[in-house]
Image (cartoon, rainbow over all chains, first blue to last red; front, side, top):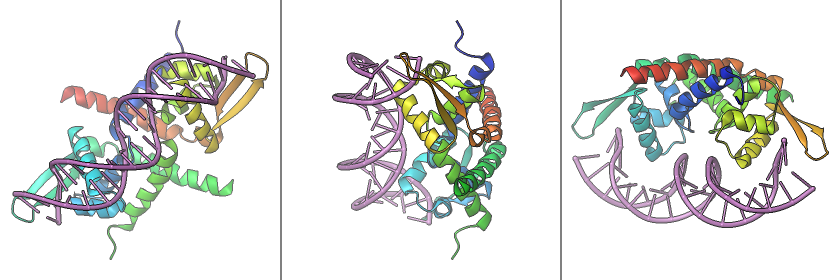
Amino acid sequence: MESSEPACQYELLAARDALEVIQGKWRIPIIISLTYGTKRFGEIQRDIGDISPKMLSQELKALEANQLIRRKLLAESIPVSVEYSLTPLGISLKGLLVELRLWGRHFRTAMIKS
Amino acid sequence: MESSEPACQYELLAARDALEVIQGKWRIPIIISLTYGTKRFGEIQRDIGDISPKMLSQELKALEANQLIRRKLLAESIPVSVEYSLTPLGISLKGLLVELRLWGRHFRTAMIKS
DNA sequence: CCGAATCCTGTTTGATACTG
DNA sequence: CAGTATCAAACAGGATTCGG
């Protein structure tokens, strides 16, 4: 007694795999910021604008654990210097990010007209 | 004192427009289910498998309010009959959903190998 | 400058039971 | 069948303070 087409179930599984990693208010914005180059903690925070250091720290760790970004310690001295960049896996999100940007624009346009 | 490239800011805005609408644990799964055709409440629930009626009802309302899906009352009699389907705006998410599925697969493969 | 640690709050999500 | 009501749990997010 199947509840639906197998193709639908397959797509639902793949989507949920992806969502588990990139879901949340901040992860996509962080990744977008890093697609424009290697950045420091403060630079990412300024890009996004309204993220607290706590959330940024927390989400950077989660993204690093999932191997989407890489953390590089530049200098142990005070002040400390750290750099974040995308891994190949993070870079592979490019197609998704393009679609997201396109649809975001499309949605806003549609909302204005209606 | 600009904080980053304008292109980055532009992309961040568009992405956040999109995320506001499709974010959350259930919205994408619901939309995926409906890309496979018009469905009833119970059918969507069975497709997704582990969503409570409360959450499904709540998220369907949100998606309808954003004009991604359409609700059609088929019969007032008991039992009631209702159908949900994608609007053109909902259908326009297709490209994004394809990328999401592709990346979900890619991510899982990458995780297994590492 | 780059965070870590704590505390606190509101929202999201879920389990369960119930109704037209 | 298609939801609603209620209650409880989990989590996201913010404010503040602190340290290397």
